[in-house]
Length: 514
Image 1 (cartoon, rainbow, N blue to C red):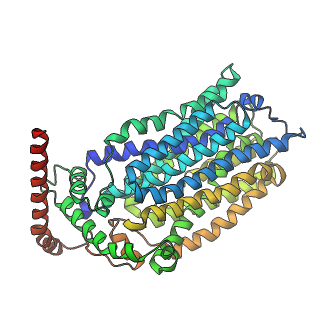
Image 2 (cartoon, helix red, strand yellow):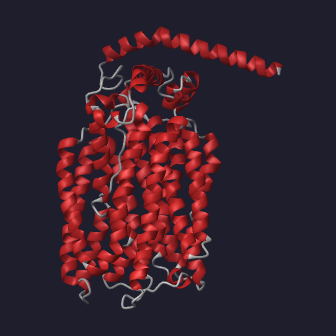
Image 3 (tube, rainbow, N blue to C red):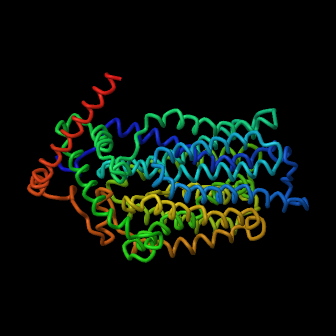
């Protein structure tokens, strides 16, 4: 069976979706602030005004900007925390840490007694969420087979936006509560459900086999890889054996690099430097499309378009539902048409929708023209349908740091955008979108010329697209080459399996004796 033909096992699929609860934690924690800003009870409890003519309205805008900015600042620190703990502690312990911090921060948000406590809780929640948004796709990518990695890792993006959906509809339902405190506290408290579920399931989530091999724990790594690739149509575990052999050979080749490289090598070595640029532009281009500004302030934007009462929260729920569907379509297409085309198509769609949105807002914002306002709303919906998330370009020994760098830029980019947005929408209104139009136009050109395609390759083989040497190929090779590969690894692999069996027998006897 060719490696490129191997699909996923049900066990691997269950692990991917269990990890997606971490994605849901981040998506819900990040987006719940949008519906919170639509709840009258939130403003009355913290003595904030919603009246734009009130002299204190600028203070309200600063608090709103701080709530979003502090979350992004905490998330940035969480990304870099994962960049180091993933290597030293392992992926699984890092998952425990990030989930625990997110749970504590979320609980403090729901129980906030004053605005200072709420802002601190937003920072702490961001710290935990930043850990999760970094570690989840790493773990998913390291257990997914190459032929379906785009689909499996794509579930991170889909479930992340599903968190937006849950936040939107829970917030909308709570708007009708007669209790002003329940309006905003209950939706925040619901955010504790997802990290609690992650903590319950984590004992059954395996450690990354690639990290185990890096730590010379090959027996444990083989046991996990074998279980991950346990399929009825591959009884001889041919792909599992080939992948195990490839990972071992590649990591052995990289051990020399671990001894000679340091953090600065990420920027001085040409192949790493290109990866860092690609990682930067992946997230910078997404955020510079205005996607999170439009969502986080969607309620305020809809109010500016003339909608009032419960309608802005209803539209926010619809907006996120469309976005989740768009992300799922992206996950389905990622392994078929490739990552790079989807990125360009997505950003192109964002650009077109932003141009129309800006044009319509310039004519109809603040007017009573219902047709124009509805057209502007349509293009806000269209914007989110093209969102895409993808990350798989860093080699094993620098993957956590590379991911930390990339996702760190996601939050560094959103901090100024989100901080400035409330004041920008008040002062310059639709002109704020022009910034995103210009940046998106530039980013499309950069991605077209800079980004290599990674579809259908193992994580080890992706390095070849950045001019790194690959120790062993197992995808896109002929059957004759595969037979030679199997013959090469046959004796070595048999000896390894026999060694594992002997160790298991010895441990079993020792346990019985004890």
